[in-house]
Image (cartoon, rainbow, N blue to C red; front, side, top):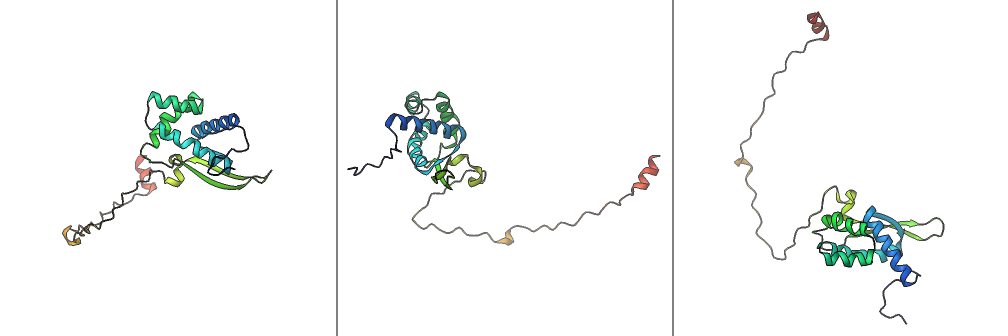
Length: 173
């Protein structure tokens, strides 16, 4: 019986599964977004998010731990340089899975998994900052009266007379 065992084996033996997830994680770190099946995307999310958390603190020990999982020094370097700099203040949830429909050949559920901070379409080109919510009711800020600021009206400047192109050509000759 498999009570309490939540790990998806993806119909592969241990060595094949670890190599596949390591390769997919390196591709995700390099390209910031990959297309795969929903089951593999969910397994990859569980595989890569702890590694991104480790990359927030750049120590030799953390680099060695991440390298033991990824087995690709270029992937580790990019993870600790670019990805860690973007996700430094995020407390978790570094990846997003977007379902894309079914694959044409075998009707498998397909999904796109991407790093959240590298998608400018959803973020609007800027980072979203969440404000801390308070349970206690604070005093409401009083609005300043509008009469306190002096109103200045601008008058339009007089327009200069326009010269026609004929006058400019005659004076130039």
